[in-house]
Length: 494
Image 1 (cartoon, one colour):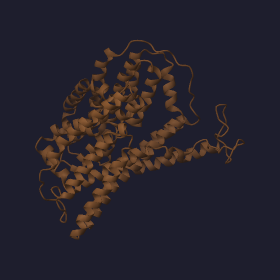
Image 2 (tube, rainbow, N blue to C red):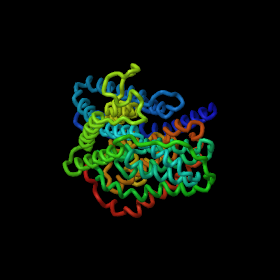
Image 3 (cartoon, rainbow, N blue to C red):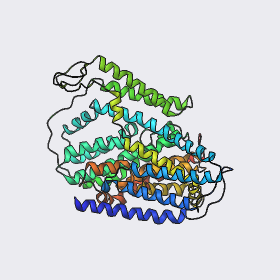
Image 4 (spheres, rainbow, N blue to C red):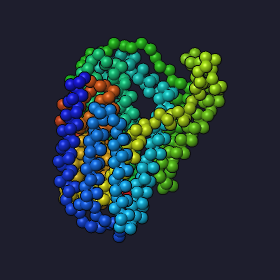
């Protein structure tokens, strides 16, 4: 265990240094003046350089979260506060603070829409977990007695299918639980299956706004219509199948021992699944037909769950599996334990990934601060103008493997490059699946390193990076081929 942790530290440090060496020379170059009347280019000002250094250090701490046990939200929230305080101080000294306030509120609105959307999605996922839907799926797979190779494909295939609906992180955690339950005595199977799940979950999340934060951000910006993301289905499938087919021959052929016990769904499980589908439909309808933010549709869908939760509590039917404190109407039960309602929607809200949500707050404001200073305009010039949109979007995939796809995609959106629809689909694909090349490149990979600690590690994943890169390259070529006509289309909004 100690050796694996030390290896991970070295891995994080190595890739952080690579990022610093690539980013600092670019950011240090001078920028052209422009933008709003009262906007000031601070890219060469000490405040700008300090802010840039602060963000890089904060993200280096995020990358080392597994080793330091410091939650990733803490350094980025602190950095965001310091950066905007420094910007406000500089503009106040010039007597033009209003432009800073407007820019900050714009970034805060970006986060608020993302936050409320994700909060509802996480609440529904937690509700499905409480109704034991994921446990039942795990139990069903375990009891089938499949071989390791077949389970390798089943868990990967399910990850690809489920991630567009319940997001790649949740899907990866559910499927890894199955893998660990079935193959706990076979480290080789667990490590390969975890790599396959990460690749599959990230691939599946690339063609749905609900599958990954990057696709969600592009959709909420109005750049790509909901149904248009389906054009990425085949390239995403290729990205998953190519490395899985090559890893297949290294997966053990043995059959794991069966596990006793069966999980029963709790009352209302299927109804909650239907309500989640209705919530998604509401969000899509609000956005496509009423031109309102998808967040409004999701919050409306939360009311569906709230009313159904009220119904479940009021009509609870006791079962032999209930504990004495479950489903009681009174405040306490005979033993003195406080009663738990049959369904508590606010309890599901409380179980949301708050560290992740706060991390998004810090990232949005940090990147927004760098954009306001002038660095993203400069970076856009050197990447999207000098390299060309296609090459730049391919580079974005490699960057997302090193520094995570969320800040990378937010930075691209903040740059606002003038690209046709095909290029926006390409950057959505590369940012989504590019993180699979390294275990630290996506939330799914980082989560599985913790879940399968000591078995699925940074260097275990790194050994298969060349194979994953083949899938990455193949998916890009397939997109350029089958979606060639979209490179002549303009985007829907911006």
